[in-house]
Length: 324
Length: 290
Image 1 (spheres, rainbow over the protein chains, first blue to last red):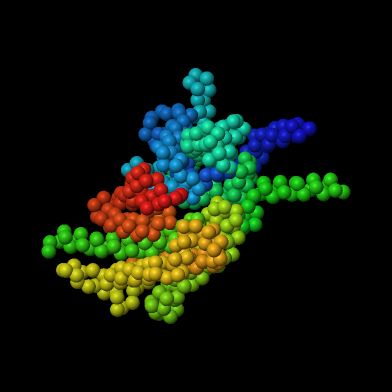
Image 2 (image 1 turned 60 degrees about the vertical axis):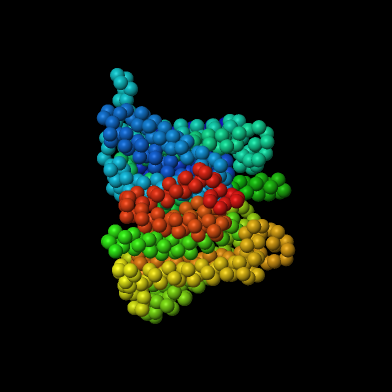
């Protein structure tokens, strides 16, 4: 019964997303692309925070490395295919994460958080200072966006917003599905076990540091996917846009609002936060103030987030129905 | 004396002044971390808030000294409220909640400051007595920076005397080691936590007031020193005051001489230093635990 309901729900959601640009027009289509990018980004943060128990305050660095690598490769390499550019972005993020791993995996708890914050500030500073490569505050913009093509078979123009919407949809949904699948594999079980009791996992014969390194690399690779799509969508990559502290805090806020540890929580959170932004900016420019207050309120009074509250509500409802 | 030596000495004094201020901020951070396990991301925001409070006091009463007295105390008051009504409630649920609340505070303080005082730089001139230049061994050097060095040194001496010569200091040092044990011995640890949090934010507040006349008051005031203070805590070892002191001074000199020799990459030097230390000693220079 529930399996059927689930199936119908997913098909309906997919149909809605496919028909979305036709129903709502260009502006809201762009909003959905950003929503997708941020949701995927928040999911990668939650893979570390909710599933492995590692709070990363510097996930913007992986997002940013992916975005900059994609933008730089498209600027400097003539005739680079689209998918190769995205793969370069992902590979750069993964390589960067691998580079940091020797330092990151030995730390846990607050030390891990501080290290990620420090390294992301390093990347932010570097992106501002290495003007020749990154363009400083101005960033890199106006690079050529190649068509999605298989030589001789088909070629789809990516500068068309509608085509790009469908392309981004496929990339983001595929990445989300891959992340979801990962949490269902034995590997997913091991990382949850590390969150709950790392020492015990170690005694059971699993290599905690190796597993942590792997999950960090996976998480940052998908953050790189989000960054690459973001770079292609905006056609502009700047230090404040991708490496700024707010870029690290936003996915954390989304994850916390949605519900830490629940897989789909961050998507809820990112939807709620973006909706809030749309509403708040009508009244005031101080959206950060509102998101700060919301973050404090959620942590203080609803630490399980929206998904947690829904679960509690559902349990209460079931209980009441049972009693009556 | 040739001009090159003069520049070296001037930069050295700059570095000393910055290093001392950095230690005022970092010592509060590392003490709070050592005792409560909270990494107060909003620590630098308190630093900035204090500078704005001081600007307001100077603007209203015209007295810098009054600002120096009131602003850090007001900041410490807000710090105590935050500790009492937010962090204390979350302590039972682990550190992630506390970290996230301090992130929320960063946003709230930053936006509130812009709401009340605007985004432009506000000039806060030092008082006349310490406003001029003084000639040391043939170099003209601003008196105010010497005053900053002297004042920081004074605060540090008071801090060390309290920590190492009084009963309260003994309790604090014991609590840094093992808060639960001290609590079990019948000492009111929540009160000690509040006191340490107040002292930490007070010192950050002093540093905020001290730096305001040098670089004016603006919303990005805390960006540089806040980041540097976190790096100091990581590099010096979490909870280690000695480590924080040594690394603060090293960072002060790295900043001042770095700007002179490799101007564009100066901010990166500290990260390189941190990375080298962490590769050799993952717990930091004097760190004994995570």
